[in-house]
Figure 1: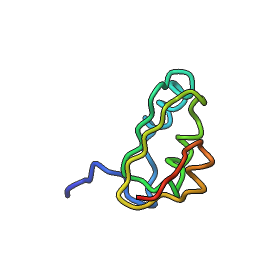
Figure 2: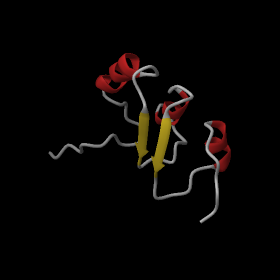
Figure 3: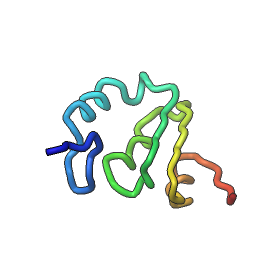
Figure 4: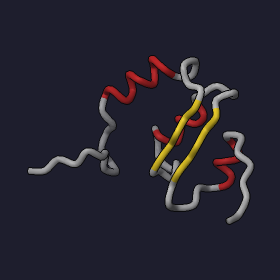
Length: 80
């Protein structure tokens, strides 16, 4: 069968994901891109919280992300 290269909802992320977080976060991250998630489900929703306060964060997602969540990680939100 064909195995997707994405992690489907309800499936665990690969161990390499968690190893990378332990090795890199928060001290080695200057810029964090979070792409393709509404940040409503863990552990992806914790990534922006686990970087230093000086780390720049870029979040790209097709659907709107909850403004209260964005405020909690230091984003100023605007409509449009």
